[in-house]
Amino acid sequence: MIKSALFGATSVLVSIGLGGFISGAFGAEQSVSPIHAGPKHIIDHKGMQTTGPMAQLDTDGTLHLAWGGEKQEEHGVFYLKVPPQQQSYPEPVKVNPSSPPATSLHEPPALALGQKNDVYITWTTPHPNADGKPFANLLLLSRSVDGGKTFLPPVQVNDDEAVTGHSFDNLTVSPNGSVHISWLDAREGKKDPATYTARSHDQGKTLSPNLKIDESSCVCCRTHMTTASDGTVYLAWRKVLSGAVRETVVSRSTDEGKSFSPAVIVGHDQWVFEGCPHRPATMGVDQEGRLYVTWYTEGPDDTPGVYLAYSDDQGKTFTRRRLLNKSKGTFPDHPQLAVNQAGHLLVSWEEQSPVRREVVFTYSLDRGQTFSAPEKVNEKKAKSPTVALNDAGQGVIAWSEQVSFPGWSTVIQPLSFPTSLTPQLHAKP
Image (tube, rainbow, N blue to C red; front, side):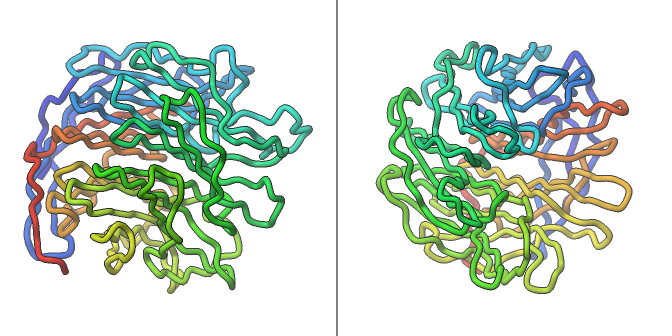
């Protein structure tokens, strides 16, 4: 059961209480302890077309949001910071006020937090020589060293000038402050792009030469990165194998991103698909080093599903995949995962029917052994969820919702998890 409880700031825009949810069990016949939900907050974008949000939480509960937006001739990347207990949401900061326009309505900008009040956002801008090529772009890194008050001029991430795509990016910050960036890159002109990475050891001032990780990547399934407390860097992407088989794979780096291990298949889905699903994987790591992965697939039986698997050996092997979605009459889509050090998991995804989309979520308090029954959080048509969860037990789900037709707003649902940092250990299944 989820109980209504005040959590953090109360929005001056809108506050909607979340009713009592009934939690169920997943993977074991036992109940799942309740978490608490605070009032929802709604950001009205005032007619601007926006991407879905990207969210992060500081250890003190400060909420960080980023999104892309277009209105008439304005094409921007926006960032919002909401300290805990603040009674109103401030106006967002435009990340690229004097920079080239953003081209990110197909995906939100990537967002990561450092340990020294630094904020990092990656986004794309049209290639100056695109000449009508809609997907020719440059990948840029914007950074703030004053806690998001201002952003320095962006740094170009891709070190080539090919008039082609450099996008579907993600980034993470290691415990030592190193910034790691991943993306899909078509500079070689092949049918399928390659997966690339770059890293910075000086808060994004400079970047290493681009490192090619793998060829034959799915052309529009976004990459994802995360780091463990021991500094291991993980990278996930969807790989195209022979026969148009598309598998979610994971690679790891134990040398601060200088090199990555060969790709390991996570689910062995055997999904044959002649096209790009546009559905990425997401990951997280707990304090015991367990690596969790969620992803979407239709293989091997052409049935759409959202799955989870985990690894206890740094991504060398994975458990059998587990189905998270339960609805029989909807199409699950775009799963997002957040993990804290205690081994608490928060997963959200879309459920599509012929008439509307819903945003649902589930959670686990025992390192992925049992899960609550999936529950809906939106009131109107909704899409593009994102999740965040910190080590203090504070969580958030944010998504786009058509609160007032025809515009879309960003809705934020705060959650409160148990605060114990001790993982609830179970025997391996």
